[in-house]
Length: 375
Ligand SMILES: Nc1nc(=O)c2c([nH]1)NC[C@@H]1CN(c3ccc(C(=O)N[C@@H](CCC(=O)O)C(=O)O)cc3)CN21
Ligand SMILES: CC(C)C(=O)C(=O)O
Ligand SMILES: [Mg+2]
Image (cartoon, rainbow, N blue to C red; front, side, top):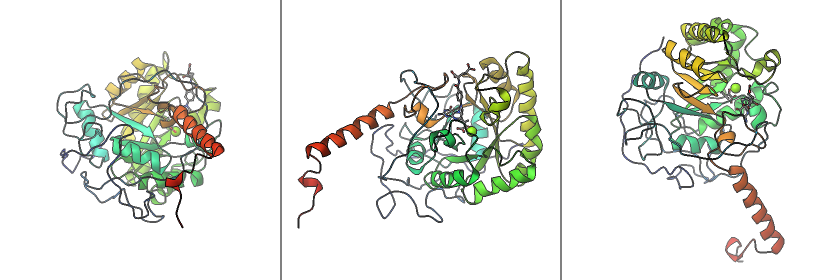
């Protein structure tokens, strides 16, 4: 079902990549504002081998994203292990030294991740992390941090556009976000969600939408929700050269059918999950997201499949994990789902910065002479 990696993965020399707050090395943009022009873009060189020397894009850009959300306040922070590679990172529960320099926190140089690498990691038992990203700045941070796969999720509906569900977001609204993330991700594989209504009509409709995500959005792969009934669609896209990540379990685009945000695959529908997963793999999916399914059912699916599974609320026995970045970074307003672990308090940090800035302005202490220009 899957091609093999053509490139070798060699780890390279150190590149300082501080996990948080550390300055990244430089930037290669002329205007000093990070980002790449509208066309062509820097970053994500496609032709490239699985090895890339490109420095990160992005930089000191301006405005940050705005958040909204559904979620709930998450628990505290904890340890983290990004990627797995060389330097004795215990991250993966796997056999020893990996060849893949996926991790960015250990000082290893990053390589460009391509689909065969994910397959190789499954074979080696190396777990990996996926995060959503919706804009250039967050994407450049995650890319440099060694997150191998970035998802421009239709959760942008909630976390960028402020909707209560994922249903309202359109292809036209998603494409510019995908393009921004792809332009800022020289190493990560960029997957774009097909939004509700853009693919369920027919395999042909899905093809047209996926082509837009790749041509206009510069995505490397697409994701779609649904079980065995999506197999013909997955097959058509895959055969057309469009890598497809599948998504089963709780599929938010079907919340009105499923009856809300609920764990899926309890009891006898666990077998149904395996049947769906096998059909999607057979149709050519390169990976499979499982959302909110009982851990034992997700473990059974993971074991039954040759392709990597990506869990969100699906327990520790998936091959990979995904979280919405604003949830894991503590940026989301309000409650977050049970499966979220909060690794930072971005909302608190940004709130404090905004308040201090406003206070300085009110007090006349900003701008100071060093922020002002002489005649
Ligand atoms: N910020 C954000 N995080 C997400 O994980 C996310 C989005 N947005 N938007 C799209 C979907 C919607 N998702 C959601 C949304 C809510 C729950 C939720 O409320 N879950 C409850 C109930 C679970 C149950 O008991 O069945 C929970 O406590 O986890 C779960 C997934 C996951 N996705
Ligand atoms: C939660 C992930 C898997 C997703 O589909 C999204 O962010 O849209
Ligand atoms: Mg989604």
